[in-house]
Amino acid sequence: MTASEIRALFAVASRPEVVSLAGGSPFVSALPLDAVGEMMGELIAKNGASALQYCIGQGDLALREIICEIMALEGIDARCGASPDDVVVTTGAQQALDLVARVFLDPGDVVLAEGPSYVGALGVFQAAQADVVHVPMDDLGLIPSALSAALEDMAKAGRRVKFLYTVPTYHNPGGVTLPNERRDEIIEICARAGLLILEDNPYGLLGFDTEPLPALRSRVREGIIYLGTFSKTFASGVRVGWILAPHAVRDKLVMASEAQILCPSMLSQSAVTAYFTTMPWQEQLKKFQGVYAERRDAVLTALDDFMPAGTQWTRPAGGFYVWLTLPDGLDSKAMVPRAINNRVAYVPGTGFYADGTGRQNLRLSYCFPPPERIREGVRRLAATIEEEQAL
Ligand code: PMP
Image (spheres, rainbow, N blue to C red):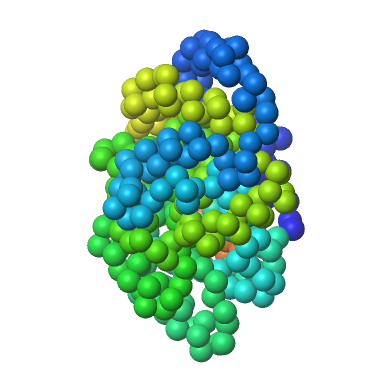
């Protein structure tokens, strides 16, 4: 295991004079905190005896039913075989990734993953001693022909590919979204190759300009393990996520989770259940979408206004991130000290590849700072890039 680049950056990025476009912390202050506090108080007063107790390893049934209602917003419902019985509640999507890795991966197995990919997933796959092989993306996400080519290469090399890890909607860190036609193509390619898909979808309900897109899992009954989380639709601090998995796999995941943590926090699960049954969560979701849309607009306008020629970036329609490509010859990792000196932080692209590539790229998160700070941060970043170019 190696230390995450993001963790190392956090110490400097959290200094007040630095505009941090590095970490991806949700803006939980947009929640009605007093009302959530009251909800928590009532929860203990009325249901403390169960909320403060252990529960079954699979997770509380009342919450698993709510999870199915939430997944139905992205088309995952009884028509494609989703049921509370096949849901495993986890400590965030992060534990979900770890459980899937524990159940499926042996040292030397190959995991196919978008290039770039979510840094926390790469860490999990590397800890399981799997080899991550990246499949390139373009502005429309994972490229189907590149996926086919990667599968052919792996077959020729006699390598065992366990699954494709993908974030089809509002990608972290790519900021791109797979259109419907490509969703069908990817599913088709994987079905033909008998390859399992691990669909990770933390941001699907945080689209700015459209209704939620149908998840990959909504299109097929089998061949996909689906991961969700309440980190972005409610609060990352409750640490509640889930896995929807085929029945036989679900059993193994529950056993793996029991070995790790006995059961997910019943207090957190009860809080999520209370939130989605007693609070106006749909209005709050719209509020989150509005806050992040305003920040996305701020980052894109500032990039248009300040970035020197030769810099490129993605234009996210949801989620938290912009993926930026520096002008030729610049190195995002080498540029970090100058950026910090100029009081702006970002994550270098290398953190999002298992193979050390990504030096010309960086990730900007617009989820946490207010719009005027985002603009100032982008101005400082543009100045940093210009200074590097002038060397
Ligand atoms: N997957 C992706 C793609 C993410 O961006 C994140 C959070 N940044 C996670 C999983 C983990 O989320 P959590 O553990 O908070 O549910």
